[in-house]
Length: 105
Image 1 (tube, rainbow, N blue to C red):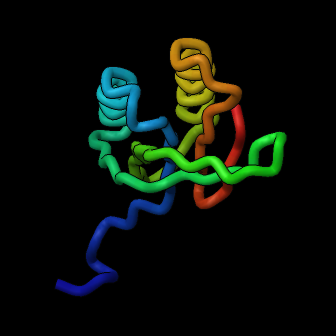
Image 2: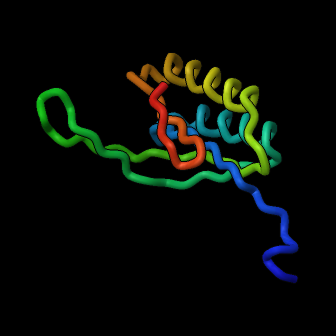
């Protein structure tokens, strides 16, 4: 089999959630899997500068899916889910990533 014979999954969408929100991570994995046929989870360390200029770090999960084509409806449903996560997790923002571009919700 050659690479040219394989189906390319050209698009990727991801949601970043602090690791302490276990149920929300499971729920998001299910949302992405239902929308795109599957999802994966990666563990990372997130860092940012706080208002007082100190570095804050926390464990974060990236829940992501690949698909052959993202639609506006797909993206809108993930944005809606991220808006709910922001409220449920009491976060200032939730990061989503669409084809390597980050968007703060």
